[in-house]
Length: 310
Image (tube, rainbow, N blue to C red):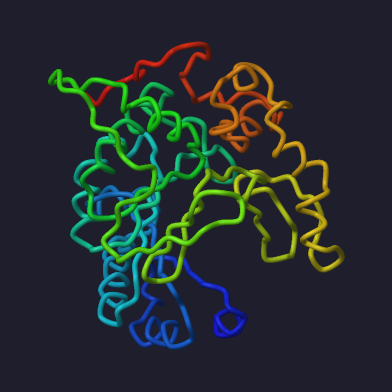
């Protein structure tokens, strides 16, 4: 942690919600240069969270970690994975996240890889409802919201300003950036637009990232993947240049070329903005360029919100 901070990186960490995360360890991480602490919270109650994590006591340990972080003024991020087990938890969980005073709520949409199972997925229609609910929440929440493996959230945000609420009132357009409780500043970005920078120094890109496109994952053995959910290695940093692998390997070049997308993702007018989850496409079809099976959008002039908040 200290080495990374000395090199000028803004370093964040996601510890497991266990009893091993003591207060003096959190304080030591802050002293070493940790910029933000992220913890996984998948339910608003111990029953829901512990059942998903399969570790009794994980919920209380996780909240204790948040207490320790607040006590040493370390910004907090909450990571939550949407599954059929906690689909009805979105509202109470969002209230708990607000109570914890976090900088960012990061919502992960399940990819059936590793221990993730297809039977734990919610339906594509339910995902659409969640994305629309997150849009509504983002307009009033005192924290930032981002999605992982749900790039079609960008399409929802673009569509909703033209949409109508269930009460008949028009939806007021919102900025694409997060709201956030921490003071923020913007700096110009060479690729165009501005990067939003939180008080903890961690920025949000002005354009969306996707598997292998603005994102790279290196595992504990040095293997280089497009993301932690797309288990195709392009090489190893112990033997090859990370820069060369990211720039030149065919896997990364394919993932950065929207013209190579297949099916409805390839026909979609949002393919540059969104591109679908390449990890989910690979997990369910075996082809990382196929359409995202969990997006219900039909390309071609569908400007109405597919599903409004129920």
